[in-house]
Length: 308
Image (cartoon, rainbow, N blue to C red; front, side):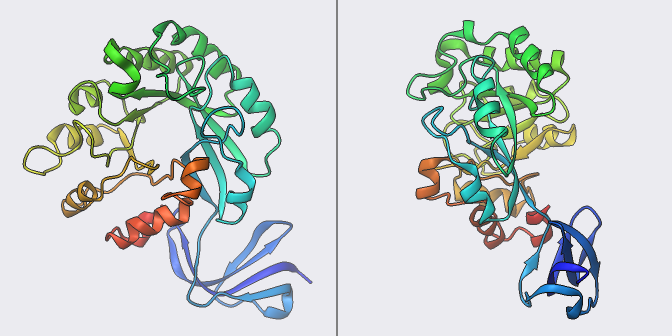
């Protein structure tokens, strides 16, 4: 047999190539070996008719928490990813410079799923959520974070910061400024959690550079993407125009669907959709990445944009 597995009659959506059509897809040795309008069924050991189903590349979950047993939220990656089509999961700042080696050894190196990471600017990461990791700014050392990020560039994608009143206390935007300094030295973007921010939303955006990522932008607490009239703020549009990326990062309390609907009315869609999946989120409202994608499809986001 030429192929190990053949998926027949599926709706193939491949954002990279632009393919959006009914096709057969064949696999050999765990990789795509052929995509064609009609691949003979006798050429494969196993044939599955997927008529009516969408066939897409492996999903990437840009924001989740995978440091199992390392902090309050850690999720075991392989059981959930292998059953939901997620082939790459990015841990969003569970660890900082002091404990990233543990994430690398016990999660990244052992998971069948490809696990990448954003390094928290706070050296202790999200070790104990009831106490904000930015309460003591001495933990947020840009040089230390940049050094670890450069040492582990094969895994670390960027620098994580949280800008939330309950996390930063009276330190305002200083954690973000330190995260940006680390990112500049390491040549990486920042990914910034913004929910109930300590300043007006536009002040956070004003510091961000092309390629930096805003998480939880559909939140409904404190200053957000909408103005007093329920319209997307000019500062938000301006940030997108200069290359700032907006990621859903759904989580258990980071999406207000009234905000989503108003943004969608203006055609303001997310650049990326991620789950912010955690152990309690898996058992609660988040479930998994496909469930999160389905919510935004149901709210009117075009299928091609959802998959992309």
